[in-house]
Image 1 (spheres, rainbow, N blue to C red):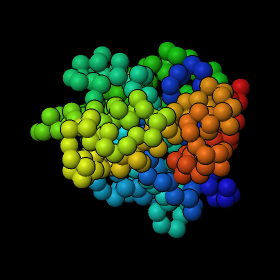
Image 2 (cartoon, rainbow, N blue to C red; image 1 turned 120 degrees about the vertical axis):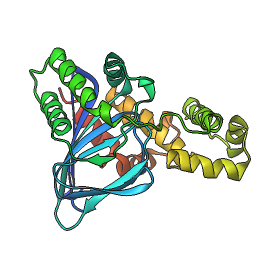
Image 3 (cartoon, rainbow, N blue to C red; image 1 turned 30 degrees about the vertical axis):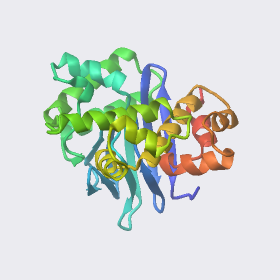
Image 4 (cartoon, one colour; image 1 turned 90 degrees about the vertical axis):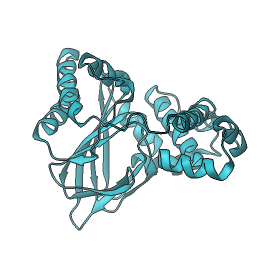
Length: 275
């Protein structure tokens, strides 16, 4: 890894299902991928350029980045200055209860409407949560309070796109996504997916790419990488994970993992399992 590209993943036992990434990038580019968690970040210096939600986004220092679960995106440093940023990954299991407490309708499908925006209150909550993760003395009650405040600030950005006009088509594409999630260890054929979605092959390919930002194959690979990350956090040996997920060898697993997280699976596990 180049000295100009540093990725540090941190978690805290008091903050279950929440992770912090502290990153510095000069010449690294993320491949197109998506997370199962909400991603809430702050650009600290430089500029972050990334394609998400159908457009090129540019985040300058102090701006908030918000990505919903399943939002496909890439990312790189924009301009000449080094990019530094911090990103929180919050699992929906941790976030949805706060949304329900705020009486958000369809809380399980909550989406932040703006991908990049400026808001001092949201920025403050993200950075304070990041400091809690770094602190060994953080308590679950402190975390709960701050997470509720972050949810409260983000609710005003709630997307009105929760339900599309074509609910039937959306339901079919969701069935295809669920099928891929349930069969991530299998080589799923395109014909099988088309049968699940009740669509013709080329119609399905076009609509799936529009809906998810990825081809079905990319989406399937992304699921496998996320399952691998979960296993790494549980302490499963890297070679066993690679075999379980069906990668040809450890090198193949490395090549798929690093463009998403900036480091190899073994480096990621070593960071996460540090007491």
